[in-house]
Image: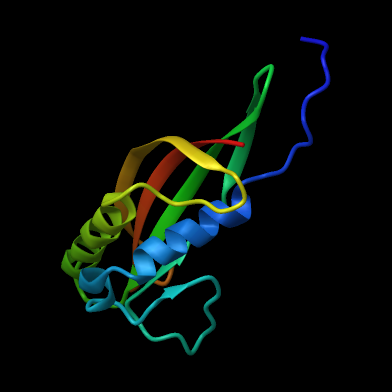
Length: 140
């Protein structure tokens, strides 16, 4: 297709905000974590949730600009076993998928899939790190 596409803009910020709102407003998740953070430092209290760095693949059509965005949601726990991380991971996924993500700026979520989940022990040998991988297709 050799036509001129409409101006391209990315849904990265609206999608990040939508995930943040959906997670931070969920009562069950809020009761189990110290917060949902965009930035953490060494003083952040455990357990907590963060939204990871996204990866974008564009998929333009004749009339619109679409994006396939991979987003990882993370939980970090200092609990001695993996039980706390498993429970928070479940609450995190439920909160992220309990209703459609609402994006600002004229973007629409076409589809969202949970690609996978895992809980690992971080390199410090103590911190349990749960990861939920989402693939989100967005149209503008």
